[in-house]
Length: 419
Ligand SMILES: *Cc1c(COP(=O)(O)O)cnc(C)c1O
Image (cartoon, rainbow, N blue to C red; front, side, top):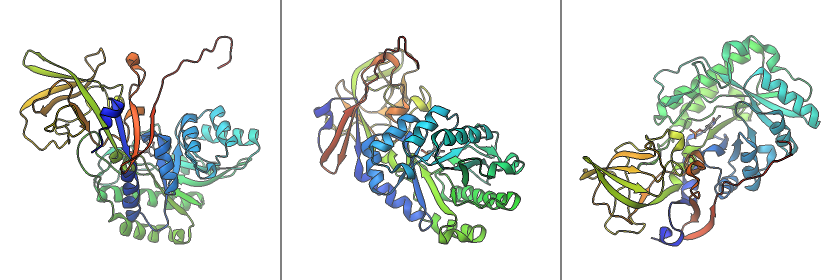
């Protein structure tokens, strides 16, 4: 095994492109024939990872001007990009249109009007998907449900039915499809199938009530992945048959691409590609507790999951036999010898990665491996807090290193200038 920690120091993210390819291939087996697949850049906008996805014909789903830049830098064709998310400003939408983006998801009538204004100002024809908060919930749903309950996302089904104008063209803006994103991180394929079925039924019901015949239905995602703990991606291979029969029943034209069926995934495509390497800087005892101070805190991993609750006690890096090298497999399988609280280098008691990691005899200088950190890792963390240099990221393909970088938080003076 190559000693990346020795070469680049820690904290260090190692991303393996073969894992990205494997995840895409496996997920595609579970999707209806000919489905379009979007990658949500928020999971990991690293340009080399996004480029790998471009090469696999996975399109970009973006929600900011920074993600737009990353997608374009990764050779995504702008006309294939889907721009989503609440609170899009007129300026960012105009910039995206100028870059060639032609498809946006709208979250409200206000966003529809703003997008129509942008299309007019840029003198371009734009298509929009209307994001629907489907009535729900689907029976037995798991994971983090995002629709069927009051939500800041999308337009409630009843409200959409009451505004048929939403589904008509205004100026240069033409509604072309529907967008659903019912849940996230649903590991049980049967539960996820129920969510998709509800979305398909909702699309069919909308067509009945409003006459809107979508060209594209984005059924969203919800494909799960372990986060910062050992484990494999759920196998969604069995979904295809179930989904195809649901589509045949409600939207039979889908087999001829009317509508095109699309899915989105962030974590499921990139979680498994990433491993975080972090060094034990200090080991201390206080009362009945042992603390290991790592060089990776919530500035490097897991700011998004909430401070202090990153890794469940079962989700632990497990030191191997050799100290100081990148040979430790996180298995979590061995019985606890000593519960260690893993903390980062930030000056706050909230900078905790794990409250009771059953680690063996840790030593100062040991390097721990935290698996399944390719999604919602560095860019979902508190990068600027305490102003440590951000972690280095190395992208490898087999034994070849293909990209190494470090993000920087930079200062741009704005005196006397407009924002
Ligand atoms: C966050 C998000 C995703 C990606 O979610 P994952 O759980 O990482 O797959 C996809 N679509 C939308 C609209 C999102 O907000």
